Amino acid sequence: MGDIGARQAVAFDARFREPFLRIPPFPGAKVSQFARPRNVTCLNAGIVEEICRLRVGGTYWAAQPDLPSNCVIVRSAAALRAAEPLADGRPIVLWSAKGASSVPFRGSMSICGDCDPWHIAQSAALVVLEPDDEFRIIARLLDVPAFVHKVDTSRTIEEDVDAAALLADTLSGTEFDNPFTGAAMSAAEAVELCGFWRRLIDSNRGIAGGIGFAFWKQDHVAPLLWNGAAPFRFLRTAPEAAPRGPVALWRAKAAPQAVSALEQFRTPLIEIEDGFLRSRGLGADCIPPLSITVDRLGAHFDPARESELERLLQDGEFDEQLLTRARELRRLIVTAGLGKYGQGSASIDRPAGKRRHILVPGQVEDDRAVQAGGCGLTSNLELLKLVREQEPDAFILYKPHPDVLAGHRKGAVADRISLRYADRVVGDAAIGSLIDMVDDVHVNTSLAGFEALLRGKAVTTYGVPFYAGWGLTRDLGPVPARRTARRSLDELVAATLLLYPRYLDPVTGLPCPAEIVVERLSAGDAPEPGLLVGVRRLQGKLKRRLRSLVQ
Image (cartoon, rainbow, N blue to C red; front, side, top):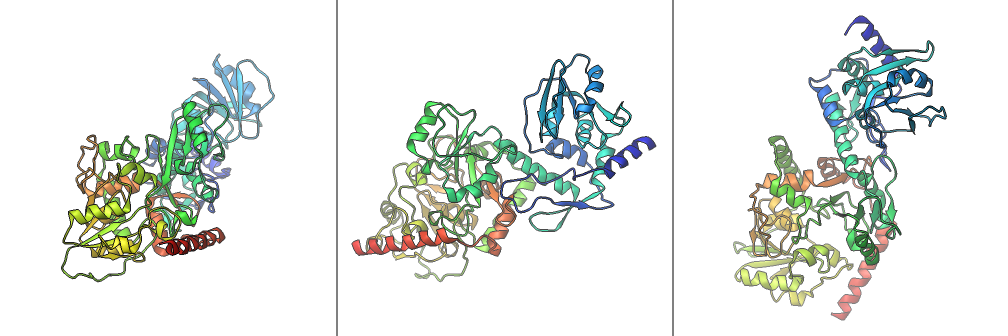
């Protein structure tokens, strides 16, 4: 780049108002920026290519309006007259940050406010803007001709600054702190994190709203379903007219008439469920989730139809970097004793010495995962009977589901009845500690089977959970014939915990990688239960007391 170009780039940097790489304004986020001024930075090789590949920088999360192709983008009303001869008959679009212009001229349209500059540049034949506009960086990165209009002289000059030099000069005034850990981050790491947020936001574009979301979950779910342009809409009923896009559905809590109405409209439904590393407590106690799954194909626990998770496991490719992350994540989870609903890894003595020990986790009998994935097996008592038939000489430990123990959900089996088939009922022991102690875990569809695989234990399935049929479990249920791939444990973890769910950091309120939630749960940084949780726990105690009187 010549001396003139260098001076122009430096002048641009001096007037720069915001860092080029920044955090999207996720609803409820407690952190708004991760960049701060600095005189020098070292840019990694390939960073320009990564920024272009991930399409980050500027307001990359914002609206994506429909534009005519091969149009001329004008960034200020003052530059409209200068743009007309440059347009040469092409449509002109005035994009103003402060509001639409009332200046009339044939063939124009106006958009105002924040928009995704990468989306806009893709439709542009050329852009006309002022010297301090960061949009020129993106235009030049995408090889869109940029004309700089100087208001004081009314001159419009074609940009001659190299895109890479522009970007380097912009980032040279910035350093980055990891918003989750506070540690220093390189510019390349900041780009990758922005790319992570962009992929999340882009996946939510077009979703019309959500139905079936309990009020106490909404603040935690909204950032993970936000489309970048408008607040996520939680609906109580189906719209009177067919929605303009897919609807996110928490089916277990949605009103049947609303679901029926959406199905009549043939509205695409997106299945939303709790993630596999959920929180420090029970959903039945109204403790909001730190992770969710979002599936446009079907519920991950329903073997009757393919889900996005099943497709990942059947057809996905996993590079060594991802598998290394999966191994390390599994190590962190096991070391911390994390499970879906809590934490615990204290060592437990084997009550029957060298005798074979089997753990049978109970489930909520009317839960959708049991109703669909059990393929007819929905009773905890029936599961115990089947396990005893399979393992007549084993020492069987039965652990009721936490939601059932808490008194909220269906599936309770009186101890005197459980002990006809099990040797011991272990209600209060941590699931991680029990898994560590036993030789085998027998499940219907329980996530405890997946947690046992993480800990290197043998697992036998009687229903068809998402982790059955990949060569890692002994499967007695009707696994779909379409599950033909054979997966390693690291590949299962990569798909199930790294690629498929979405996670929310309880400290910053930002969507985050899985490792951050594992770290927060391990350190006890998740929010403490509130008043609603206390009320729900009291209700559960009263229900348990009444049930014990009946039994």
